[in-house]
Length: 116
Image 1 (cartoon, rainbow, N blue to C red):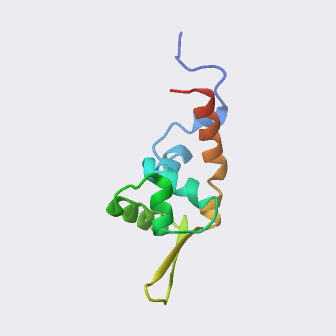
Image 2 (cartoon, one colour; image 1 turned 45 degrees about the vertical axis):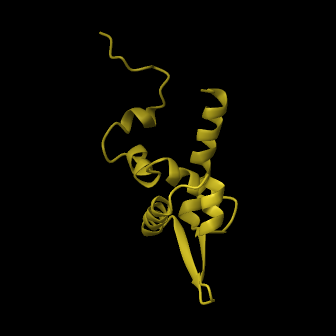
Image 3 (cartoon, rainbow, N blue to C red; image 1 turned 90 degrees about the vertical axis):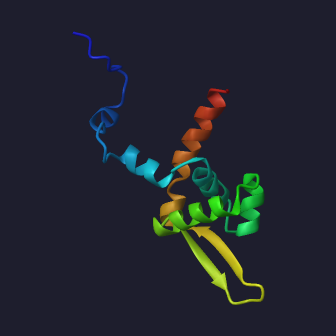
């Protein structure tokens, strides 16, 4: 009987076919294009809001603010406000955020090997 399952699939992926698996939890963090690209940019070091926005191609300020807040809430990045005039805010990945580097590298490799 044909099961439709590729025999070359890693056993961990076969066992992960449920809603609360690691793949689903990773997608909850890397929710959408901008979120993933924010993490990519912050892997290069801390950045201010304007630097992030310019590096990403100018997403709307609301969209970027929403993504940054979500990542901060999830413990992926920290937001440090410096008491200056005007206030300076710097975003930086936490250890949890930096641990996404291998995920993004796998995405980079796949994208390079499979051009649009």
